[in-house]
Image 1 (cartoon, rainbow, N blue to C red):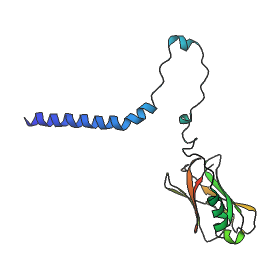
Image 2: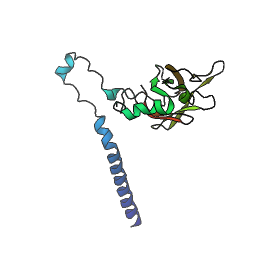
Image 3: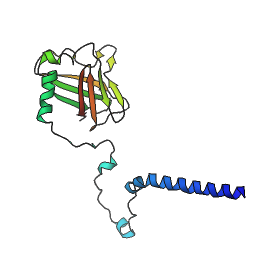
Length: 185
């Protein structure tokens, strides 16, 4: 009698586990269903190649929609930090991400070019904290001392392992300076 009860419990557990697995995989199975097999008549004629869909190239499209900065946002960085034109560019190899900015007010922008402050790039999706690499003979890959107005300065963050992809929103932190929600282009 106990063997029959144990067999019944085991079969119910397997059925429950199968149902849970089916529920978990259901959304993914619809997105990845293969196209129907071509008929014999269609296979004899050559069909033109279809353009690749965005899903065929993961990481190449952005889940974020481009937004224009509000007037308040455009005025904040020049007024508080003396910089504007904040940009993040993904290099062709993907191993580096270039952060550039234009100095408007050198006195306020000194915090970005300070030797003592360590710059970081934080990616909320992967929780990665990227740093500026330091080369043996060159030093840190960043420009220091934002002293001239209307001059563009830059720094490069190491993206080893491609933790940050184009189209992602990231935060740049340099001492007390925080630029949140910048899109990697």
